[in-house]
Amino acid sequence: MPGKGVIRRVKDALWRTSDLFGIRPVRIRSGPARGSQICAPIRRWPSFRRALHEAPILAVIDRRVGEGQTVLDLGASYGYFTLAFAARVGSVGRVIAFEPESRAANALRRTLALNGLSQVRLIEAAVAETSRTHFLRVPENETMAYLTARPNGTAVDSVSLDDWLSRPPTEDAPQRVDWIKIDVEGAEAQVLSGAEETLTRYRPRILCEVHGSPAFPGGARETVERLRRAGYRLTPVPAAGRSLEERLHTVEAAPAGPRLHTFHLLAEAD
Image 1 (tube, one colour):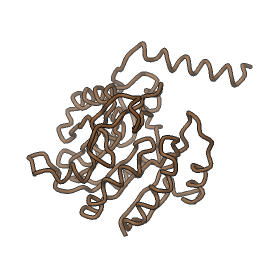
Image 2 (tube, helix red, strand yellow):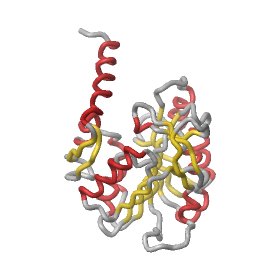
Image 3 (cartoon, rainbow, N blue to C red):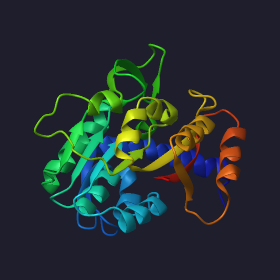
Image 4 (cartoon, rainbow, N blue to C red):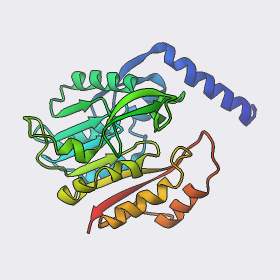
């Protein structure tokens, strides 16, 4: 029986060589986006096809997101959750997907065209505390790309939600914001810092992946505290099991390293 080290090396090799096949479409077989096609590297196919990727979040989307609603998908990546949101809001709803990493954004653009999702708009930009140029570090697992203040990554455009939503009205500007999904690899507190007016004005529900990231030390607790100060009650996802404070402590106590420690929460206005 091969040891764990051997198995890990084999998995790493398969992860790297899967990119040789490029990004191709695969059909999702279950979950809210059942029947949709998603363009992604083949290493992502098993979890995407069977809706295994972050199933508790999919369950919240399936139960709670309604027809005609408007969703801001921050850190859309290949669009797995974008497709789920689009299926739930329907043709009369809106999904605005933000994704700064060029490879994922190009794949998502193909995905939207394949599925004919005219209710989804893709914005190739990061969301942060201010609207300016940031730098994006893209590790081997490109879905974990993260912003950094240091100029040692790829320069990308970034916007704050307050700035973006306060632009002069245009034909495609959202008139409401019902949901915000945040998956930004450690920059959650920075996103919320640039969204104070947005949360006050629209009171959206928020699905947030909270990260323990060496790039943003202390960011996990700051994220929780910012949401509480904004008048939100917080529920871990899934709700069963450890409390929010226990999950927060685990993230804060995790040693620095390439593996990010995370948990999900649902924030709803009081």
